Image 1: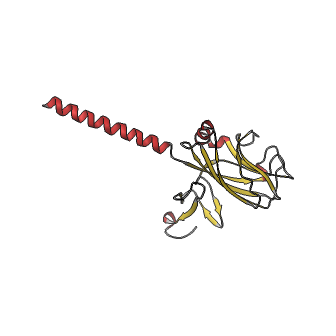
Image 2 (image 1 turned 90 degrees about the horizontal axis):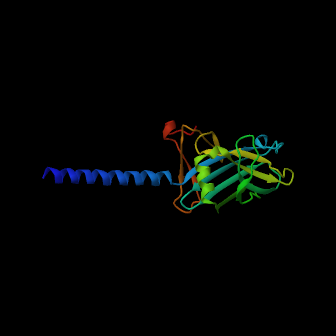
Image 3 (image 1 turned 90 degrees about the vertical axis):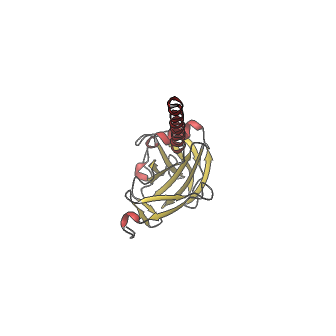
Length: 192
């Protein structure tokens, strides 16, 4: 009887461990969010557009081999292209994801990518950057390195977002229809 009980307990613990490991693996494969603050001074080779700036919000879904993004730019002449490039800060690298050009100062879409590219971006976001090109700056007008969303100060349409605040994404519609909402719980209910 004791042997049967020990076997049952061991089997139960094993089943629990397997399900916990599977849940952890699913969580690690969940879509990951990144951001990039783009400026002309970040462009390599420079010079970029000294007046231009922008923000990119990027969601990488490894399970779907998909990159969804929203780009906003300001003080740029007509944008002609946008990409995610492989390259650390200070290094110009090859494009790995072609993005919809923010011709009116904004663009939002999703792009299919190689599974390896999605994996690399999630595992090493600082080795990738977003940039926007213009006719005056064909090598790139503005650029920003990817980093985990919430790791820097953002200006999201006049709302300042700080790392101590919580950035939540509501993706209940489509992945590229991400809505940013400010959570004021860490600031006692007031907007910073």
